[in-house]
Structures are given as C-alpha cells and as structure tokens.
Image 1: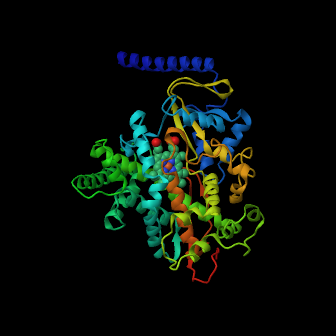
Image 2: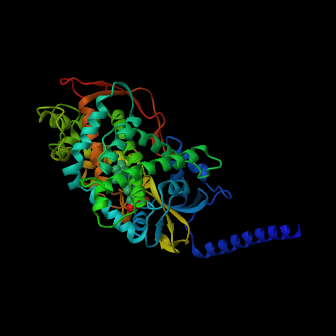
Image 3: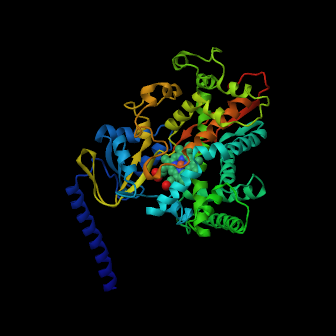
Length: 494
Ligand code: HEM
C-alpha cells in the first residue's frame, strides 16, 4: 500500500513539475497571444460547435480581432498556434520537412498505412510526391485521362432521373474515376465491393481511434484489411502481367524503385482517400453555389468574348453560351470533351476558383514544429507544438478578396484579384506537399459541370445547409430534382 501511495505521489509530483517547467519555458519564449481555454479540452468544444454551424467564421474572427492574425489556442488535446496570416501560412507550407512535419490525427494515420504519401517524410516523400505529380500532370490528363473522365461522368449521369442525392452521386463518380486512373478498372461488381468497404474506412477517419470503444473504428479497421487484401491481389496479378498499362499502378511498377506490394497498396489507398471527399464535395458545392446564383449559372453558359463585356452582361443572349457552344461544335452531343474544349471553358474556371475559395474543402493544414521557431511578430512556436495554417481565414478575409464572403465568380476576371499572390489563394496548399491532384480535380469538375448544365435542368429538392465539421459538406447530401433537357431547351435552374 505504501509503495502504491509513493508511486501515486511520484506521478503527481512529476506531472506538476513538468507542467511548471513547461510554463516557465513558454513564458520565456514569447508565445503568440491567445487563450488555452479549459484544462485538457482547451477550446475544442467552441471550435467544434462553430464548425458544425453554417457560419464558423466567428471562431477565428473573434480571436483575430482580439489577438491579431496569429494566436494561440488549445484544440484536440494540444496547444496550437493558429495562423490567419498569408505570409505565415506560406512560411509554414514552405518549411515542411525542415522546421515543420505534417501531422494527422491517430485515427487517420492508423487507417492510411505507414507507406502512405500523406504520412511519408524526407527523400522518399520527395520521390513519391514527384511521381504522383508526373502521373496527374496536364499532358497525362490530356492524352490519357480526359477521355475516361468524360465517359464515366456520362455513364453515371445516364442513370439520373427525378430525385438525385448529388453528394452521393459525386462520390460514386469520383471513386470510379480514381479506380480507373489508378488501375484501369471500369465500374462493375468488383469496384462496387471495393467502394462499400472503402466508405467504411473513411467513416473511421472521423472517430476516436479506440477499437475497444468505437464500433465505427473497429469496422473501419476490418474494412481497411479487406481493401488492402483486394488491392494486394491486383498488384500481384499485375506483376505477372506482361501487358504494359498507362495507369498509376503501371507508372509505379515501371519507375525502377522496386516498391514492395505493401508500399504500393498504401500508396494507392492514399490517392483514393486524398481525391475522394475533396473532389466530390467541390462538385456538389459548385452546383449548390450556382443554383443559389442563377446569374452565375446563366453566365457559365456564356462564352467570355471580352472581359469588360462579361462584367457588365446579364444572362442575356449577347454572347453565345460557353457550354452550349462546345456542344454545338459537335455533330454528336455525346462526343467526347476534348482538351481544347476544356481550355475554352473560361468562365467555368472562374466558377471553379470561386467554389474552391468559398468552400475551403481543406480549410487549412496542421503541422508540428520540430524545433523552436521564430515567426512574424517576434513570436515563437515552441518545439512539439501544433500549428494550423488556416487557408479559410485568408480566403474569406476582405483585406484580400472584396466582399470575401459572397460567391462572386466574376472576381476572377478582375486582374487585381485573379492575380493575387500565391500565398493568398491556396486551396491546394503549397510547398513540398502541394496537392498533386490540383489539375485533375479542376478538369473533373469542369467536365462534370459541362455535362450537367448541357443535359439537365434542376432544382433543390429541399433546403440543405452547409456545415464544416468534421468535413465540409451539406447536411442532407444535397438532394436535387433533375429534368433531362431536350436539345431545344436552354439550360437553367428549373
Ligand atoms: C478539389 C479537390 C482537391 C483539393 C481542394 C485538394 C487539396 C489538397 C491540399 C490542400 C493538400 C495539401 C495537404 C497538406 O499540405 O498537408 C493536398 C494534398 C494531397 N492531395 Fe489533394 N486536393 C484535391 C484533389 C485531389 C485529387 C483529385 C488527388 C488525386 C491525385 C489529390 C491527391 C493529393 C495527395 C496525394 C496529397 C498529399 C500530398 C503530400 O502529402 O505530399 N488531391 N490536397
């Protein structure tokens, strides 16, 4: 009993000593101003309740007003420095692997697998990142991927009638496209099996990584094993296959790096994860924003002959329509979208930019300081602390974007905003971890919008709100009623 009491005393004493030593160190370091909130939970509950609402901005706005654009808080069990400052965000992004390391919650890292690109560090990360970039660059998209992107989108839209849950449909399309790009499989029974298991893995990302307490997490671990087994079989089959294929798996095998089966499987899983929620959400939200802004939808169909005219034009027929024009150039309306068609979608690119800016699917990135780091304002981020570079706070700041909280695709025709410095507009991050799928996501979204506006008119089936925790999404998966257009009907929201 006495030794138990002694151990208890020792534990309490050493925790208290550690706490005091740390506090003294933090006092010396000049931390950014802020509040660490309540013991243990810090300000996590305030953050979650803000991001579960339609308007999460006050969480950051209040703190920026009180403390400035760099402030300290305590969320998800750790003290964290938040940056709403573009220059500091850029500093954080560019110093990945030097002063900062990427940092994901335990639930995500366990399910991704240790060879995932998202978790890799050092020279292997550099190598794999550039391999991924080379796989999804514009030449590859133009020469190999575009035709399947368009075909699989059309195939999915063929089955749409009446009420459609847009978010679900977008997820299905995104998954099928990624599987096709990774390993050349067309949608079928096998891909559906894989998708069902995979969805369970994704659900596990947003739960506590405690198998004893969470059924969702246990299910996710089992599903991860099944997905990995299925992918391993494909990798093995491919190793004994003599036919060369121009997909990601083919590129990995031909790279001369002699990756193991496990490395390739983890890598493919990471790509499935990275493009899935992001691309499908941007597809859904672009449609939602356009539906709520009929003028922009009308303009989407208007080709940009002259920037100045566009700024002044309404949805009048002064201009031929952007997507109608692409369709009208083809004898067969089902003929494939070509690279030149994609390149001619000028206003669509404004819609893509603006949707990415407003939706902020990846609202920012967490990193961990690997050493004490001096930052702007003379502050120090202590070694081991987390930092959060908030892209969202910058994208929605009126100092950088006029009427920043309004959806306005026309701003991207305005030179001063469209030409904003690279650290102000960062939906795809930057530095060594710049999203390798940035061009691919833009192409998928543009082709999807093209097929959607030229095939359907639609109306929201019910009111659906945007929320931002644990991910950006609409509460009801954005149900819409679609009506197939005949050739003569102009595209419009019903
Ligand atoms: C609208 C769609 C997308 C958005 C907004 C987006 C955004 C981002 C952001 C902000 C990062 C940086 C994360 C960090 O710095 O920690 C990232 C990384 C990544 N993205 Fe995307 N992404 C999108 C689509 C895609 C697609 C289609 C792919 C598929 C190729 C993809 C693959 C990746 C990968 C593999 C990484 C990790 C890179 C690394 O850690 O080196 N993303 N993405």
